[in-house]
Image (tube, rainbow, N blue to C red):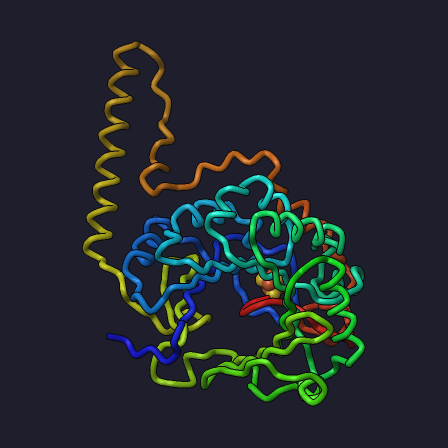
Length: 356
Ligand code: SF4
């Protein structure tokens, strides 16, 4: 049995699909999607140890993924009562509106990555015009609230973040109607930034906690729940045990985000039997169909039913945004010396959870 080093280890699902942004601090890499992806995920959800009760849906940008809805359908809410969706907000309102019942049923919290209180600066940090502006975010938060889902604004900070940036971000939280804000230090050491130290002196600390690889502190500032978080880049390297599990688009389950330390809680035999049973069912149904078609003297067309054997999502969402359209909007201007081509910006660097 594996050694769990935290009380509530997090199970993150990197939702397969694209991202429309190009944040300079991002370490997400697009991966090949496994054959039988949903079946593998289902098998992992069935077999993951009981210590895991919370799921974090991350990406890429989950709201641009065809897999988000089938993944939610796969999650058993009694087994995983805390499901958190982390998004940069693109297409969030559309997803909430279109799948409101499912989302109300399965998602408990939404984290929206927001890099700056001014829309234009925020777009520059995301490296795209396609992230939502303040009014779109407000609309999505309002809809989430009506569905009973609490929203947190996630914001990456650096050593250059100023006191005024923090107050302005808290003002932004009030304006868009979110409940909480999380200031996350860019991955690296657990040491608090100067700005965190400064606010710790002036406002009472409600709770403080962490583990060898992460640290968090909660304060109430101007009526808003403000948390400060820091974590090491790759938690699994810091100790001999499991802090979290990450399910990758390629179907691997690992204890790290790079996908190097494999975990295996799966019942492989059982999964193989299920895959074979599905293939057998599909072949029988294809055979029957061909027979019927031949008997009717109709032209036999190639069957698309092979997709059924992996429960591949049948997504007929006409409003789904075209990813190529989103990509077209990415500004071409870059600044010399920044490897990612990310525009120079010296202020507050808000963003998201692990990846955002
Ligand atoms: S940090 Fe998140 S939003 Fe930014 S590029 Fe990476 S995956 Fe996309």
